[in-house]
Length: 114
Ligand code: DGP
Image (cartoon, rainbow, N blue to C red; front, side, top):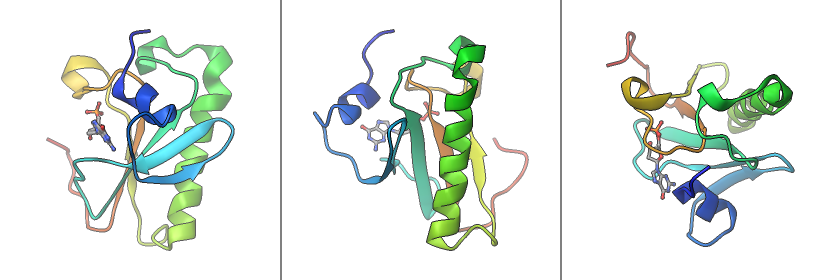
């Protein structure tokens, strides 16, 4: 998998506003927030796109979701609500090819997305 900016954040080569870390997952604030809360949850094991994820990585993918929900609860906005999403490839709007779960919150989010 080619090197990405997120690999460099994982190695602490470039700064990021890290809000959560465990053995498998790192979470940091998006550089271009689209909502008052916009955090990216990434696996430490690089996977380029959701298309590249394997059944062996199912638990890791679940960890991203559970980490996002735990963060929402800890920060006190879980009951108000939030959105999690993962963009895939060109039509999904993916720009960084190390999968990441977006967590957006802090305002009512419209549907359908653009
Ligand atoms: P996506 O379009 O789904 O691939 O989202 C990539 C997100 O990554 C986008 O919302 C902006 C964010 N981003 C890109 N480069 C950096 C960076 O260097 N630092 C941080 N914190 N976020 C970044």
